[in-house]
Length: 244
Image (tube, rainbow, N blue to C red; front, side, top):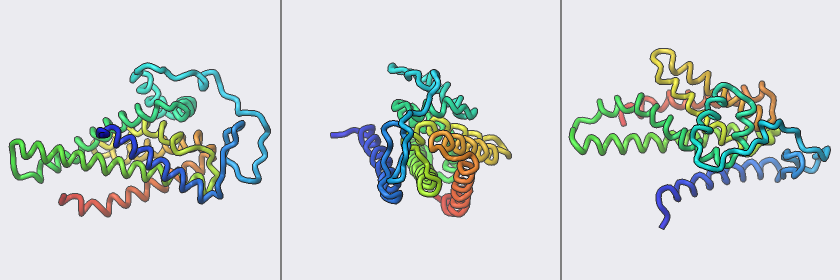
C-alpha cells in the first residue's frame, strides 16, 4: 500500500502530465528536436548545432543530499540570476528540493496570515482546538498547492500557445518552486502584499524568459496578467473564506 508521500508524488506527476498533454494537443502535436532542444512542427529547420552552454551551466548538480546547494540556488533565482534559473530548470532533483522549500514557505505564510484568523474563529480549547488548527492549516496548504499548479500551468500553456515557448512544464516548475519563497514578503506590514506581488512577478518573468525562450516583454505580460487575475479571484473569495 502506498504511503502519503507516494500518493503525493503520483499526484504531482499526474498533474504535470495533464498540463503537458494539453499543450501537446493544442499546439498541433509538436515534438522536440534532439539536437537544439526546441519544440517544433512541420516547419522547423534545425541548424544541427546544439545551443552553447557555459561551464557553469553544464556543471553537474550534487548527487548527495545537499540542501545548502539548493538554498543558494533558490536565493540566486530570487535575485534574477539567469544561470541559476537555467541550471535549476535542467536539474531533476530541483523539483524535490523546490517542493520542500515551497511547502516550508507556504506554511510560514499560512501561519502568519491564516493562523490568527483561525484561532479567533475557534470557540473551543484543548486538544480539539489543536486538531482544528492542524486540519485548517492542512486544508490551506492543499489549496495553495492547487492554486500554484494552476497558476504555473496557465502561464506555461499561454507561453506555449501564443508565444511558441520552447520549455517544458517541469523545466518551469523547478526554478519557480525554488523561488516561490519570495511570497513570504507578504508578511511585511502595510507594504507586504505589494512587495510580494512585485517580487513574484519578477521571478516569473525571468523564469519564463529563460526557460520558455520568449521575450522579456512577453514573459512580463504573462506573469503580470496571471498574477492580477489570481489577485482578483482571491479578493472575490475573501468574503467567503473569512467565515470558514
